[in-house]
Amino acid sequence: MSTNDGVENIQEQIVALLPRLRRFARNLVRNPHDADDAVQIAVERALLRLDQWRSDARLDSWLFKILRNAWIDEVRARARRAKILMPEEAGEQIGEATMEREIDRWSAEAALSRLPEDQRLAVSLVLVEGLSYKDAAEVLDVPLGTLTSRLARGREALQEMLRLPEGDLS
Amino acid sequence: MTISEETLMAYADGELDAETRASVEAAMREDPEIGKRVARHRALREAMQEAFSAVLQEPVPDRLIAAARGPTVAPKDSVVDLSLAREAARQRVSPAPRRWQPAAMAASLLLGLGLGFLAWHESGGTLIEPGAGGKLIAGAALAEALSTQLSDDRSADRVVVAGMSFRDRSGDFCRTFSSSGSDASSGLACREGSEWRIKALAQSPRSAANSSNFRTAASEDSPAIRAAVEGSIDGEPLDHAGEIAARKAGWAGGQKH
Image 1 (cartoon, each protein chain N blue to C red):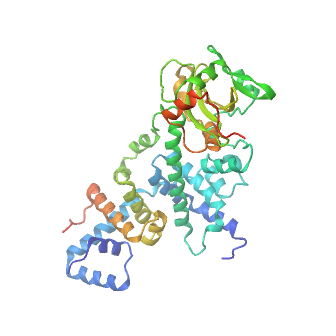
Image 2: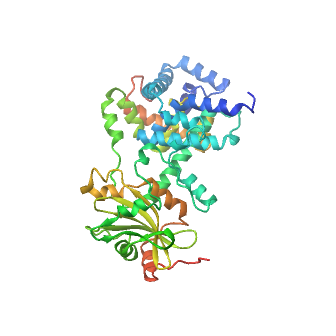
Image 3: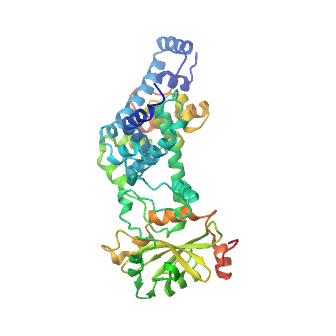
């Protein structure tokens, strides 16, 4: 891939990745509207930092990482914002309302949403997004061993909650 | 032979090197129980992929596509990004108002416009009035609130509520505020000399339809005010003791040139 006319090309690749970014964002953020906002912020940041993207790295995991960091910043900003104006606003309820209706998928989604964030993101990146352990560890900024142990614990908890048919732990 | 659950998991995820993979496969042939455990890991993987595939079929909102195609295509669709707003504020002397995403756009941003103070005559008195040189300054009722209220004092039935306090980068004290009454609004004011100068005003999008419930509407965190705070705050907001000290000192700013 040439590097010069690469920008537009990368932008189109990012467009193609938007559905997956939205999916990861929903596991990261939960509230679908916030999730899309997070995607938008991440995409805008990514375009400002295209020079930092090494073309040998996967574009998807690079974007996942930016997305996650954008959300961390947002959470911090919200904590500060809570002090800025009166903290009377109720939490948003859009997320729960839509989930109730999706009974079929509710159990897997609900199970995942009940995991601690560390595990939830490890599971989301590896099992849902199909990233390698190495790439997922890179997205989350943790050593490989940390990623695999979060993944193992997350999986175990999910098996427990979903009670998938095959076998028991010995 | 014992194979750890993590190894089986890695096998199911295709993460093992050839040698370890071969030993897992040998173990699976010998012990059907191991095969079941691997199948369980695979079933979970499939279940998770299945559960989260629906979002991939959803139409992607135009604003995201526009964002991916670059800021020059649709700058007006930018989401409020505080770090960027802050960065922009750092680079410019007077930050131009950013354009917000459509939902937030509904909060009309009345930065220093005459329109602003027209809506700010409340029963309690004039909240905002024109000062020298075309500036907008706090009227008596608002100035009183800004000068005396502490942000953690939550007494009800106030026309104007002063919010958090902080110092801006020139050392002046600034405070957010929100008003009740027919035009639920919020804003940011900074102390300059003996006046509270209005730096930003935002009208709540819901104020017209929902005037009786102003507190909720006014306390909604307005992106415009949020950005104005983020663009000027130096350090953290004042705590209770900090506000008391500042109030005692008449909100006189620090190292102003």
